[in-house]
Figure 1 (cartoon, one colour):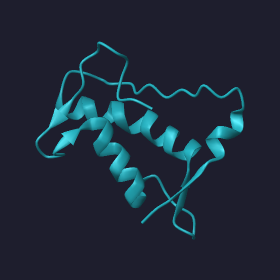
Figure 2 (cartoon, one colour):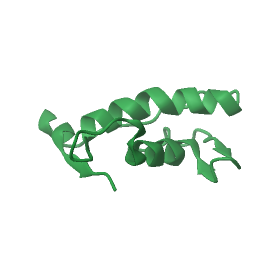
Figure 3 (cartoon, one colour):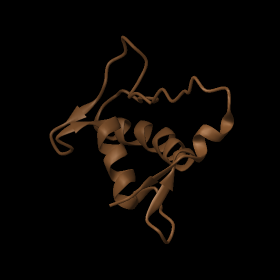
Amino acid sequence: MAATEAGRPTVENDRWQNGVFTYCLLRAMEGAAGTGKYGVIDMGTLRDYLWEQVPLESKKVSDIELRPVIVTSSPKSDIWNLTLQIK
């Protein structure tokens, strides 16, 4: 996962204290992307959340609508079933 394609501009904002991708990633890990009763998020949900939120948040503060790059080198689609623990 990356904020955008190589060579493209990124969007930062003082309110976030970092870039839009990191801001959205941290919000997702804090529960904004939704978590189950055990406080976990799977990579597929995280991917979908970032794909939706990064362009929305970047457009709010700039003329740039970032689209994150989210790929895997694994030929197996179950890579998106990896689960992350939310603290």
